[in-house]
Structure formats: C-alpha cells, structure tokens
Image 1 (cartoon, rainbow, N blue to C red):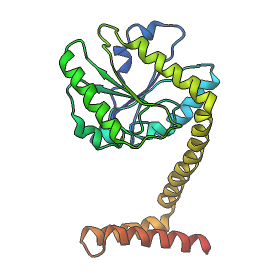
Image 2: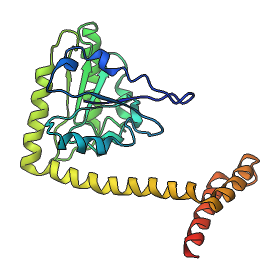
Image 3: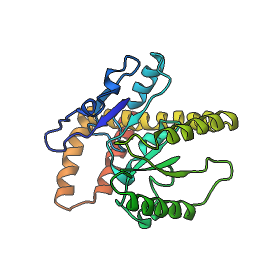
Length: 244
C-alpha cells in the first residue's frame, strides 16, 4: 500500500499517519505500507510514486494499492500509473450534478459508495445518482462497464464483491489487451511528464535565466506584462541560450 499524505501549503509538512488506520494490515507479514508526502505534486500522488510502484513489483508484491490524498475532481494523475482506478465516494456527499462534472468520474473503473451502514437511504440515492451520471457519458463497447456498488468498511460488507469486480477486470483486461495497451500509453505519458519536470529544473538551475526571470517577475507583479507573455519570454531566452 503506497499511501500519499497531503503536505501543508504553509509549513510543507505531512502527518504520514495512514498506518494508524490499518491496524490489521500493518501486522500482516505479507503486507508493506509506505506513507509518502505529496509535496508539490498535483493530482493526488507523490513525485516518485511511479518509481515506487516499480520498486514494489521488483520486490515481489503482486497487488499494489495507491491510496491518494483525495483531492476530488483533479485526482486523475493516479489513473496514468495504475491498471484499475477505484473511486471511493461517501453516501449523501453529492448528487447527479457531481457526476455530470465528469473529470474523475468518467475515468473511474469502479465507483464505491462507503458508509452504507450509517446512511442506508443516502447510499441508495447516491448509487442511483452516480449510475445516472455514468449513463450520460459516451460508452466504448470495447471498454470495461463501470459499476457503482456500496460497502461498509466498518461492517466489512461489500468488500468481497469489490475484489471480484477487480479480478474480473484483470481477467478481461489481459484477454482483450486493455492492460497492455494502457501500460504502453502510461509509459509514454511518464516520458513527457519527466521531460516537463527536467526542463523546468534546467530553467531554474540556469543563473542567466533566473536573473531574467526575476526581472520579468517584477514586471508581472506591476502588471506591466501578462504572466503568459513573461513565460513565453523565458522560453525564448532558454532556446536562445541553448543555441549559443
């Protein structure tokens, strides 16, 4: 279990206390739990989550769960590094409008409504709302049919059904080539993401560019030039600097 804990935007620290909520799993000799701070990374994961997955696979773990920070509609980065994307929702926490917003909803392989033990009626309504929302999205005949189910982590109900759906997805994914294709696409995205980060680091490490950036930053703060124009100038200086 690779648990990502949100980092404070003020003091930059993280609690990293996810293990305290996994009392049984933490004592299992076959399980490994690693909480990591999100840092400056967006999308609900940490900067090195992809590398951590590869490391866990190399160590022999056959099931790797990424538990994200839970950032709502923008929590899509984890979709580009996993085979199966499970979205956990709370009963009564939203309505059909939340589903229409799409974003994270339309890329989920499974929607699970938790806390049906305390909010049975709300759970039923929430399931109906999200099923209706999913039906509004265009369906690909060759893709997995996204389901909406309920569970109770307190009473341990619905967990077996969830696991069966995941195993069914894996079986179909391997048979129809979904997983292989998805992993190939994820590797390409990883390459472009890494390139973007590397270029940004190159810009920050260049003293001439940093000096130019500070000048442009002052102009932006004084509303002399727009942020978009300033970023284009930085890119121009970077290209010009590398040509020379």
